[in-house]
Length: 454
Image 1 (cartoon, helix red, strand yellow):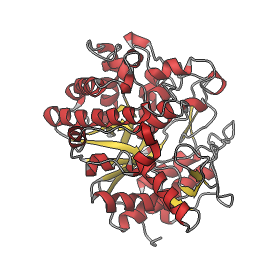
Image 2: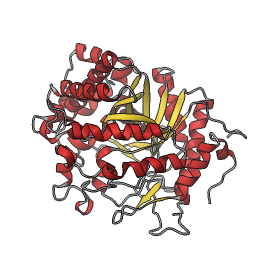
Image 3: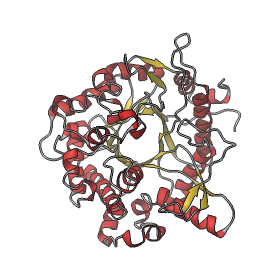
């Protein structure tokens, strides 16, 4: 690591959230239910039956949260919009009260000098559309473009960074293949169809933005570098399958116009033949790519691991988070360099990076000490800077997450936030990691050279 660290001028220092995880009030002011509202209310689908009904009550407390961001020195904030707040039926009539919430949120951010990065879809499809087949319906791409157009026309005069989809891999793997996330399907034949329609939806939204918008639009994917457990032909082949399924599945079509050939092997008879015209449509030029990074995978061949025959090998010598994710900062540098090498020198943002660790239940002198999260932030920000030094065009970093929140099927047990939330009182308390991040921002990264977390 260099003696002195200085991130580029104009670098975005932000934090990220998503609508269902923090807003609460999912049916307020004319909103319709989403697939996550229905999934969370289905017994056995989430830890302890937790739901997003109240979450962080951000829908009512957004001004307080924006003031918190300003106090921490953030100059950017990535959030998502609840589609069913905007169109309760997923199509047609616009709910002006729902749209008004995001209109006020954007104005509040700009008043604090915080640039909004708006994600159109973070997993919460309107339930009304799921009843029409959801992402398995070939019309879903057009539905998404129509919804996107509403937001472009309402907010593009103030929002300069737009994201079409957040982590389509998770939507498909968790929601259509494994059944552990909304909408809870377990169907190997459905998964590649849903993935294809999500990519078409992304492309339709980009095309719509080119006609309606004036700024920048991109895609956000979760990436995880894969390393072979041993230098054997079986482990090397397993690593390639894992890489194709995790990393190349949603990037090769967008940038190269083709799916990775390993997918046909992975899905076998469930892999469809997609029209060439669709793949040409999906290959829309992007203004940036967002990368969500949390961990890596050391991979070994394992015929019992379905559908990849590529199992994760736990590294017991490494630190692991509360969700048992290995802490491996070098993987962030590696994956950013890999993206640049494979797809070209496009602008990149780290749109999510963070860790769930055990936090003390009460503050000590007003601060919650979280040394493991501070070290996580320090080491990953240093890894991000190393990627810049290696030639990666990295434009910003968004910590996951601004607030402790509803962590999907895990409920409220894992805490990723820079800011602690007491869910009973809704009191916000910045953790020591928030103050650490604030000092890094104020110094444009220079503090990373000198500050050592406890």
